[in-house]
Image (cartoon, rainbow, N blue to C red; front, side):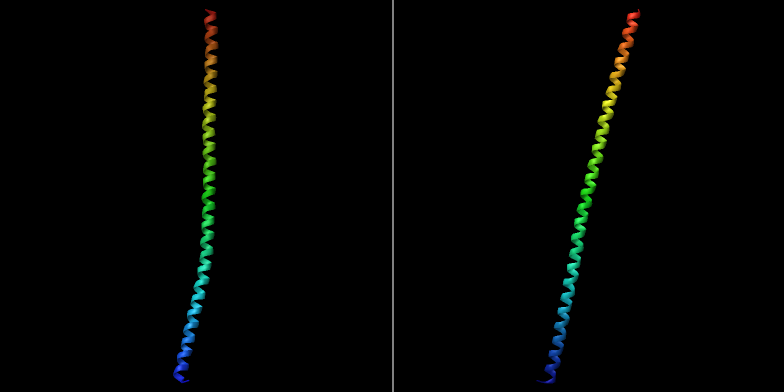
Length: 95
């Protein structure tokens, strides 16, 4: 074997080694990024679900409040009518 062939083989070995190392590093980096992306997506989905749940609960409370106020106002209105009827009945009886 000639020196030129040995030099060529050595550089080919280094070139192949460098290619293998580069490929291994890329695979490792891809694996780490994939894990982070999956975690991000899971956390983002969890956060969206949490916000939606809280918004739903808040809307329910607002709707319940609105219904309660409407019922209370109806009760007050009925009480006023009843009181008014009672007063008018007494006034008419006094005449």
